[in-house]
Length: 209
Ligand SMILES: Cc1cc2nc3c(=O)[nH]c(=O)nc-3n(C[C@H](O)[C@H](O)[C@H](O)COP(=O)(O)O)c2cc1C
Image: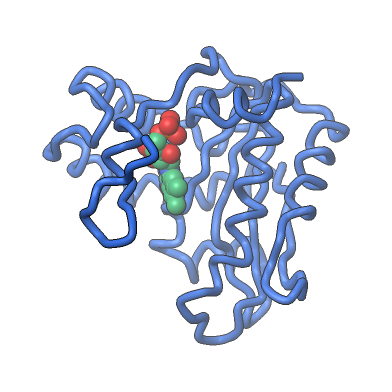
């Protein structure tokens, strides 16, 4: 098993996944990693929905694709590459994004991260679910499974939550489509660390680098 820094630095979004089934034993390890995450007050108001039913996945994929066609696709086509990304890499990412959009429902397993956030979830609510989501992404990478942290479906959050049968006061915050990757894990593309770190005051260079 790779060590944690290697896992973190090579945990790219793996958007091209094989439809081959993934053993429950591996999914259970990922779920356990999620449930080990910190959460506010240790209240553990999270639930993780394991979705394998093709019909449920397909219904959500329709919304996921609609959001791609209406907003995400045009954004990829019309915006410059972000820091640390070449135009070619950005183009490849756009193509991978479209691929995942079209094949979202074909990932053999989804983990949907849900939280009992109340009727009007406030600004900090996500901080009690995203550590679990990140733990699960890291665990998948460590096990050689591919996934992508996706939140796009929240653009039709109410509709998708209804498809998942979530009760009132519970929302879904992320969907992790999981499967064996078609491609290889590799270094993540970010800008140089020094461009993102300040010292003492916003904008003041950090002397430690
Ligand atoms: C909060 C959040 C939401 C994201 N939502 C989506 C999504 O809905 N669909 C998708 O394909 N990728 C999604 N991503 C993945 C990012 O696009 C990806 O992490 C970023 O482009 C960097 O690429 P990399 O993970 O391959 O290094 C999301 C990432 C984060 C952190």
